[in-house]
Length: 340
Image 1 (tube, rainbow, N blue to C red):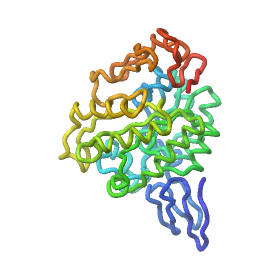
Image 2 (tube, rainbow, N blue to C red):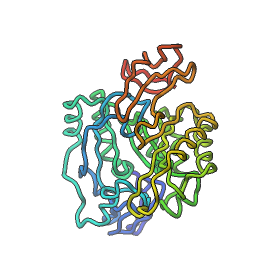
Image 3 (spheres, rainbow, N blue to C red):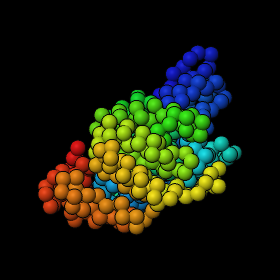
Image 4 (cartoon, rainbow, N blue to C red):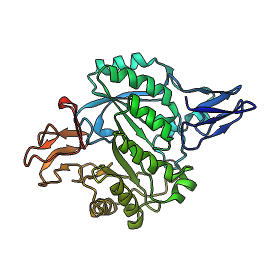
């Protein structure tokens, strides 16, 4: 899907924001889409590289079907090149492996496994779902037919055509990784474009996909007041009800010499988000921080209490605060209530 012939055997891939122009016999930046005699082919379709049952909170999605499990699936590959990637063994694998990693598994089998395990949704995660879009789409359509939800955990570096297609056919929710407020960070470190990610967040929300956003707060990269204010201000301009997860960085890949994020920096990020008007800001990768609970924006009561990936939703009833009755934006399991 999403390819355009440019003549003389050359193809443009319109799946992600790179819009790679690929000559015959070559692959795009993601290394999983190859031009074969003028026809773009997905090398990762059906090549399942990871599958696991996860709490939905692990994605992290706090306001989408809380206290349920999802079946998480991934193929190898990514369209960005973040030097701190925590899943680099999967995201960068196609560039190193002699053959496409994974085992052939059909969409129907995956959906059957999810149903058998009592999952409420599918999650396309670990690597970048954009680069295995056709596979995710086929799984997602079958999953929706069986009453399962579908969520992307994504870097958001995709085209509007993909977002519109996903929203129309299967996608219910997304956690988008907004890595910085700086175009420089995206260009020089991640090898992508920040404006593409911002447009994805805005369009997803406009089309009714439930959106949450995660920022991995990395010392020396995006941890200044100005950096965090820029992200929070943008999210508030889209929708103040978008939950923002500010996650603690731990040394990884090419950033092994960079220290973990101090607790004070994460607290500053929380305060920045609240100051910019965001209603729900959470700290991630730091259990017991005290900033994982969901508070009612009306009366301040705890409506969802969390520790790690465990969630107690007893403060909610049909998407409303039991104390004051105010709506808590999100998507909830009881009658699939959608608020906001």
